[in-house]
Image 1: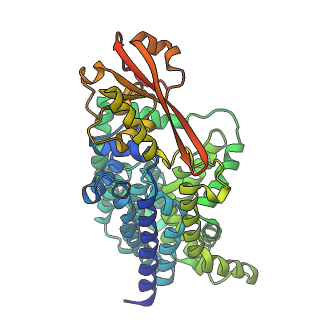
Image 2 (image 1 turned 135 degrees about the vertical axis):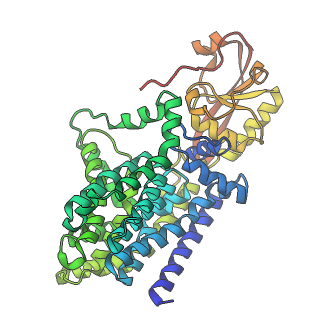
Length: 494
């Protein structure tokens, strides 16, 4: 095995090992706990997303149990096939081991990959599937064999089973075929259309599920494209978040690589346009949307494998001016170590808060530091009052309680029942009471609760802290004598 390959393997394995350590010491975010509940009730799809994240968590917990490490295990290990796919795609497209090695390590150095696979979200399997979309298209370009379009269909189908943003691969591929004259022949061939049929077949369970449930997931997710007035400050938010998620040095190399890809000397037209079309199709759409509405930083995740390849091209481009060449050298030399250090600092911060003097930051609400201890206190109150079920008013608290309470404990979100279509409904006996309501301020004065229960009694309060920082104060109420509709079964309002 050649030296670049050995060095790349060592770097990737080292970064994966760092993520595994972080996974073991960091409590779940509320989204992860919510997705974990999906893994206990596998379905064709869910209200929020397609099913792949639930499958990833299920596989991990089968190996390592219902622990934080188990929930995240397979998500983190997916970086290994992702890395191989990017390496192989780079070899096919540019026939250069330096570019392949650089692209692979730069992708793994990004916070999008390091944090995005350690914290399990639909973006983790999407990143892997996106890498294989790039690889399958590279095979089409390199071999000219139509059968590789079936592999493209499989990869796009798996990406669609991960997250709806994979739909952007459709226009990106079309732009690629139209832009490069030598590739236009594929538009008259059955192979791309057969690949599209394969992708749709794989995605069809999600379509079937939506058809069975009034298209609620499609309406929710595609409704995000509703545009308001001209709000350029959202774009001003989006660009810095990508600078951070790519990490600064990778971001600079990626931008320079996109410039270099406009030069014929950087490789065959099919290779250059494939990478550029993938990045620009997704980036420009979300930049346009950000002129009207907020765009979450992780929505751009499917472009990152191609962006890392662009960064590697930028790092290898030999015709930069001396000043730019020095910038490239610095970025290439420090990108991986900087990414690893930034990730380690984020892990320290979210677990301790020490880096900001124990002040509140953006992670303190979503990462469950202090949640296991708080849930243990909630369980003591639950046992003391003999509650048959625990009620909450939000999906995040429901997920945390379901994960950290003893297995088999009845935990139910009162509203948004459409989130829990795949889960067994609570039985009449479980809802007969007494019930423990968690996290509702001034519950006794709530008209909806007054109409549903004859008695509402405050039975305690618990707190959640990260070091000396008080994160949450959570009220606990006992509900008894049910007299009306306990659960809100109304459909979602968009």
